[in-house]
Image: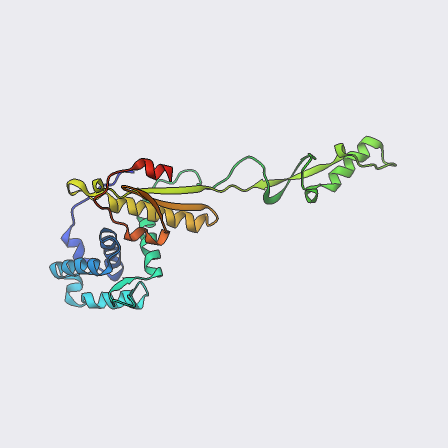
Length: 252
Protein backbone atom coordinates (compact mmCIF):
# COMPACT_ATOMS: atom_id res chain seq x y z
CA UNK A 1 0.00 0.00 0.00
CA UNK A 2 1.35 3.43 -0.95
CA UNK A 3 0.66 6.38 1.36
CA UNK A 4 1.03 9.93 0.05
CA UNK A 5 1.15 13.02 2.25
CA UNK A 6 0.28 16.57 1.24
CA UNK A 7 0.92 19.87 2.97
CA UNK A 8 -1.81 21.28 5.19
CA UNK A 9 -3.75 24.01 3.37
CA UNK A 10 -4.72 26.67 5.96
CA UNK A 11 -7.56 27.87 3.70
CA UNK A 12 -9.31 24.53 4.12
CA UNK A 13 -9.34 25.03 7.88
CA UNK A 14 -11.44 28.18 7.51
CA UNK A 15 -14.41 26.21 6.16
CA UNK A 16 -14.62 23.69 8.98
CA UNK A 17 -17.75 22.00 10.22
CA UNK A 18 -18.16 19.62 13.16
CA UNK A 19 -17.75 16.52 10.99
CA UNK A 20 -14.49 17.82 9.50
CA UNK A 21 -13.24 18.72 12.98
CA UNK A 22 -14.20 15.22 14.11
CA UNK A 23 -12.14 13.63 11.32
CA UNK A 24 -9.19 15.89 12.17
CA UNK A 25 -9.52 14.90 15.83
CA UNK A 26 -9.55 11.20 14.89
CA UNK A 27 -6.36 11.69 12.85
CA UNK A 28 -4.68 13.40 15.79
CA UNK A 29 -5.96 10.63 18.06
CA UNK A 30 -4.21 8.02 15.91
CA UNK A 31 -0.94 9.94 16.20
CA UNK A 32 -1.32 10.32 19.97
CA UNK A 33 -1.72 6.59 20.58
CA UNK A 34 -5.35 7.03 21.64
CA UNK A 35 -4.48 9.76 24.19
CA UNK A 36 -7.62 11.92 24.12
CA UNK A 37 -6.12 14.72 26.23
CA UNK A 38 -3.07 15.03 23.96
CA UNK A 39 -5.16 14.96 20.77
CA UNK A 40 -7.44 17.68 22.17
CA UNK A 41 -4.37 19.79 23.05
CA UNK A 42 -3.07 19.54 19.49
CA UNK A 43 -6.53 20.33 18.16
CA UNK A 44 -6.79 23.37 20.44
CA UNK A 45 -3.48 24.70 19.09
CA UNK A 46 -4.75 24.34 15.50
CA UNK A 47 -8.08 25.88 16.50
CA UNK A 48 -6.32 28.95 17.93
CA UNK A 49 -3.95 29.30 14.98
CA UNK A 50 -6.58 29.08 12.26
CA UNK A 51 -9.68 30.41 14.04
CA UNK A 52 -12.10 27.56 13.26
CA UNK A 53 -15.70 28.71 12.71
CA UNK A 54 -14.51 32.37 12.74
CA UNK A 55 -14.69 32.42 16.52
CA UNK A 56 -18.37 31.40 16.65
CA UNK A 57 -17.48 28.06 18.25
CA UNK A 58 -14.73 27.11 20.64
CA UNK A 59 -12.76 23.99 21.45
CA UNK A 60 -14.96 23.65 24.55
CA UNK A 61 -18.00 23.36 22.28
CA UNK A 62 -16.30 20.51 20.45
CA UNK A 63 -15.41 18.77 23.73
CA UNK A 64 -19.06 18.96 24.77
CA UNK A 65 -20.04 17.56 21.38
CA UNK A 66 -17.67 14.61 21.91
CA UNK A 67 -19.10 13.92 25.37
CA UNK A 68 -22.75 14.33 24.39
CA UNK A 69 -22.30 12.03 21.38
CA UNK A 70 -20.80 9.39 23.68
CA UNK A 71 -17.36 9.23 22.03
CA UNK A 72 -15.37 10.29 25.09
CA UNK A 73 -15.97 10.22 28.84
CA UNK A 74 -13.95 11.00 31.97
CA UNK A 75 -12.00 8.10 33.45
CA UNK A 76 -13.51 6.93 36.78
CA UNK A 77 -10.30 7.33 38.80
CA UNK A 78 -8.34 10.15 37.16
CA UNK A 79 -11.12 12.18 35.58
CA UNK A 80 -9.05 12.48 32.39
CA UNK A 81 -10.95 12.16 29.14
CA UNK A 82 -10.71 8.79 27.42
CA UNK A 83 -12.34 7.01 24.51
CA UNK A 84 -15.56 5.09 25.11
CA UNK A 85 -16.44 1.86 23.30
CA UNK A 86 -18.34 4.01 20.80
CA UNK A 87 -15.28 6.23 20.33
CA UNK A 88 -13.04 3.22 19.72
CA UNK A 89 -15.53 1.94 17.13
CA UNK A 90 -15.59 5.38 15.49
CA UNK A 91 -11.81 5.50 15.09
CA UNK A 92 -11.87 2.03 13.48
CA UNK A 93 -14.65 3.10 11.13
CA UNK A 94 -12.73 6.23 10.15
CA UNK A 95 -9.63 4.15 9.36
CA UNK A 96 -11.79 1.75 7.33
CA UNK A 97 -13.38 4.57 5.31
CA UNK A 98 -10.02 6.27 4.75
CA UNK A 99 -8.37 3.14 3.35
CA UNK A 100 -11.15 1.28 1.55
CA UNK A 101 -13.17 4.18 0.11
CA UNK A 102 -10.35 5.01 -2.34
CA UNK A 103 -9.70 1.45 -3.48
CA UNK A 104 -10.68 0.35 -6.96
CA UNK A 105 -13.66 -1.98 -7.04
CA UNK A 106 -12.67 -5.42 -8.31
CA UNK A 107 -14.03 -8.91 -7.79
CA UNK A 108 -16.41 -9.43 -4.88
CA UNK A 109 -14.31 -10.22 -1.82
CA UNK A 110 -16.33 -12.99 -0.23
CA UNK A 111 -15.39 -16.48 0.92
CA UNK A 112 -17.04 -18.31 -1.98
CA UNK A 113 -15.67 -21.62 -3.20
CA UNK A 114 -16.74 -24.10 -5.87
CA UNK A 115 -16.19 -27.10 -3.59
CA UNK A 116 -19.22 -28.68 -1.90
CA UNK A 117 -19.04 -29.41 1.80
CA UNK A 118 -20.85 -29.76 5.09
CA UNK A 119 -22.80 -27.28 7.16
CA UNK A 120 -24.42 -25.04 4.54
CA UNK A 121 -27.81 -24.88 2.85
CA UNK A 122 -29.06 -27.92 0.93
CA UNK A 123 -28.47 -27.58 -2.83
CA UNK A 124 -30.70 -29.00 -5.59
CA UNK A 125 -27.76 -30.95 -7.07
CA UNK A 126 -27.45 -34.59 -6.01
CA UNK A 127 -24.82 -37.32 -6.19
CA UNK A 128 -24.57 -41.00 -5.35
CA UNK A 129 -24.67 -41.95 -1.68
CA UNK A 130 -21.32 -42.63 -0.03
CA UNK A 131 -20.66 -44.27 3.31
CA UNK A 132 -20.77 -41.62 6.04
CA UNK A 133 -23.23 -39.27 4.29
CA UNK A 134 -25.95 -37.80 6.50
CA UNK A 135 -29.18 -39.77 6.04
CA UNK A 136 -31.12 -36.50 6.30
CA UNK A 137 -29.59 -35.45 2.97
CA UNK A 138 -31.01 -38.41 1.02
CA UNK A 139 -33.19 -37.37 -1.94
CA UNK A 140 -35.85 -40.07 -1.63
CA UNK A 141 -37.67 -39.03 -4.80
CA UNK A 142 -34.58 -39.52 -6.96
CA UNK A 143 -33.60 -42.65 -5.03
CA UNK A 144 -37.03 -44.30 -5.60
CA UNK A 145 -36.93 -43.31 -9.26
CA UNK A 146 -33.55 -45.05 -9.56
CA UNK A 147 -35.01 -48.17 -7.95
CA UNK A 148 -38.00 -48.16 -10.31
CA UNK A 149 -35.73 -47.85 -13.34
CA UNK A 150 -33.59 -50.73 -12.11
CA UNK A 151 -36.30 -53.18 -11.00
CA UNK A 152 -39.40 -52.17 -12.90
CA UNK A 153 -42.54 -50.31 -11.79
CA UNK A 154 -44.14 -53.19 -9.95
CA UNK A 155 -41.36 -54.05 -7.54
CA UNK A 156 -39.59 -51.21 -5.67
CA UNK A 157 -36.59 -52.40 -3.72
CA UNK A 158 -34.08 -49.77 -2.64
CA UNK A 159 -30.42 -50.70 -2.66
CA UNK A 160 -27.43 -48.63 -1.73
CA UNK A 161 -26.68 -47.99 -5.41
CA UNK A 162 -30.11 -46.37 -5.84
CA UNK A 163 -29.57 -43.77 -3.13
CA UNK A 164 -28.75 -40.18 -4.01
CA UNK A 165 -27.97 -37.38 -1.55
CA UNK A 166 -28.23 -33.61 -1.87
CA UNK A 167 -25.03 -31.60 -2.03
CA UNK A 168 -24.66 -28.91 0.60
CA UNK A 169 -23.35 -25.40 0.20
CA UNK A 170 -19.76 -25.20 1.35
CA UNK A 171 -19.09 -22.75 4.18
CA UNK A 172 -15.51 -21.51 4.57
CA UNK A 173 -13.86 -19.42 7.24
CA UNK A 174 -10.60 -17.51 7.36
CA UNK A 175 -8.12 -17.16 10.20
CA UNK A 176 -6.38 -13.77 10.00
CA UNK A 177 -3.45 -12.59 12.11
CA UNK A 178 -2.30 -8.98 11.88
CA UNK A 179 1.34 -8.50 12.94
CA UNK A 180 2.45 -5.00 13.89
CA UNK A 181 6.09 -4.02 14.36
CA UNK A 182 6.51 -1.86 17.49
CA UNK A 183 10.31 -1.54 17.32
CA UNK A 184 12.21 1.77 17.36
CA UNK A 185 12.46 1.76 13.56
CA UNK A 186 8.74 2.59 13.30
CA UNK A 187 9.56 6.23 14.13
CA UNK A 188 13.20 6.54 13.07
CA UNK A 189 14.53 9.61 11.25
CA UNK A 190 11.35 11.56 11.91
CA UNK A 191 9.16 9.17 9.89
CA UNK A 192 5.93 8.00 11.49
CA UNK A 193 5.33 4.42 10.38
CA UNK A 194 3.39 3.22 13.42
CA UNK A 195 0.31 5.37 12.72
CA UNK A 196 -0.25 4.04 9.15
CA UNK A 197 0.31 0.50 10.46
CA UNK A 198 -2.33 1.01 13.15
CA UNK A 199 -4.77 2.46 10.60
CA UNK A 200 -4.42 -0.56 8.35
CA UNK A 201 -4.93 -2.85 11.35
CA UNK A 202 -8.02 -0.93 12.54
CA UNK A 203 -9.49 -0.93 9.03
CA UNK A 204 -9.02 -4.70 8.72
CA UNK A 205 -10.52 -5.26 12.17
CA UNK A 206 -13.58 -3.22 11.19
CA UNK A 207 -13.92 -5.08 7.88
CA UNK A 208 -13.54 -8.61 9.26
CA UNK A 209 -15.56 -8.18 12.46
CA UNK A 210 -18.51 -6.60 10.63
CA UNK A 211 -18.57 -8.61 7.40
CA UNK A 212 -17.17 -11.95 8.59
CA UNK A 213 -18.00 -12.08 12.32
CA UNK A 214 -17.41 -15.85 12.49
CA UNK A 215 -13.84 -15.56 11.22
CA UNK A 216 -10.88 -15.76 13.56
CA UNK A 217 -8.92 -12.51 13.92
CA UNK A 218 -5.89 -11.89 16.14
CA UNK A 219 -3.47 -8.97 16.50
CA UNK A 220 0.18 -9.67 17.33
CA UNK A 221 2.71 -7.01 18.36
CA UNK A 222 6.41 -7.78 18.03
CA UNK A 223 9.43 -5.88 19.32
CA UNK A 224 11.94 -7.64 21.56
CA UNK A 225 9.18 -10.18 22.15
CA UNK A 226 5.80 -10.94 20.59
CA UNK A 227 2.43 -10.93 22.31
CA UNK A 228 -1.28 -10.83 21.51
CA UNK A 229 -3.40 -7.74 22.13
CA UNK A 230 -7.22 -7.36 22.11
CA UNK A 231 -8.77 -5.57 19.14
CA UNK A 232 -9.87 -2.64 21.30
CA UNK A 233 -6.25 -1.94 22.32
CA UNK A 234 -5.03 -1.26 18.76
CA UNK A 235 -5.71 2.54 18.81
CA UNK A 236 -3.46 2.83 21.86
CA UNK A 237 -0.45 1.03 20.38
CA UNK A 238 2.85 2.90 20.47
CA UNK A 239 6.33 1.76 19.55
CA UNK A 240 9.33 1.82 21.86
CA UNK A 241 13.09 1.20 22.14
CA UNK A 242 12.78 -2.39 20.97
CA UNK A 243 14.58 -4.55 18.43
CA UNK A 244 12.66 -6.02 15.49
CA UNK A 245 12.16 -9.65 16.45
CA UNK A 246 10.15 -10.66 13.40
CA UNK A 247 10.78 -14.35 14.12
CA UNK A 248 8.98 -14.09 17.47
CA UNK A 249 5.96 -12.55 15.75
CA UNK A 250 5.82 -15.27 13.10
CA UNK A 251 6.34 -18.02 15.68
CA UNK A 252 3.42 -16.73 17.77
